[in-house]
Image 1 (cartoon, rainbow, N blue to C red):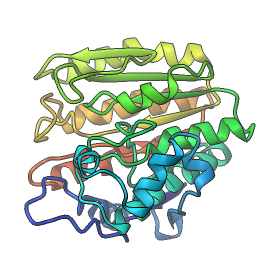
Image 2: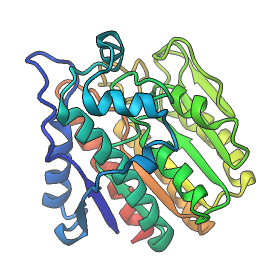
Image 3: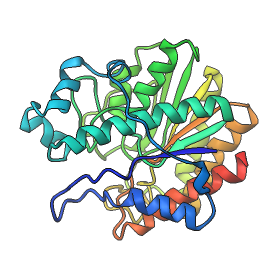
Image 4: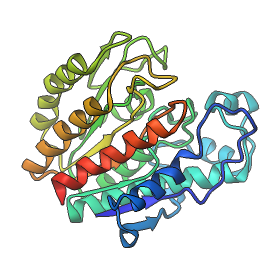
Length: 298
């Protein structure tokens, strides 16, 4: 199993910033220490080139991120202060998503220890998302003729409005989102299938919703699944507003990954959101997703 990482880029966030940028390095170390991922299976994410980014984003937006000409209000919507490291990290996240997708087509499963930046739209970023990594990857695979159809299983607590805006008009892509109905983004863009859940939803109701939704993915008959396995539905999450346990999240992952494995469908994973305080609870949940993946795919 090839796993891609990009935590060598310091986000240089100001003191007190609510985004837990340290979680990426913590996760990589945790997976190695626990033997879930071996060091020879880890690869630094390549930087996505313009051709990849421009499949999901406008040229003017990509340039504004690259050279810093982006309007400060637009940068505040993203949630990070601009800097060259932000542009480089966003390229690495998109490059990691594409590398993971290519590896999944070959090996059955791959992922990156970042990504799932599903709030980035064609012309703007939002919600800590600069470039939409999995959208750029899926559109690149389609453009290269490596796949005919792709499906997105987005189980982050926040609806993937950027995914929907960029991809739902593409008949070769199916986007499923199961999320907190009253959570960010407050203006949602319809996906192919959206299931919004009330605040404080617990394991059983969440898993029932996922179980009912997944047949739409299998019926679409994709050539690859992009799995956004955000752990912010965890009850300890500061931004989640749902009440899942670690065991519930692992059952969620098993439900998706085991059925994909049984159907011979490649899966490219992204870790999505996680904002527990302390952040160790999110890191544990991320690591559990990879434990489940390893147990199923070997």
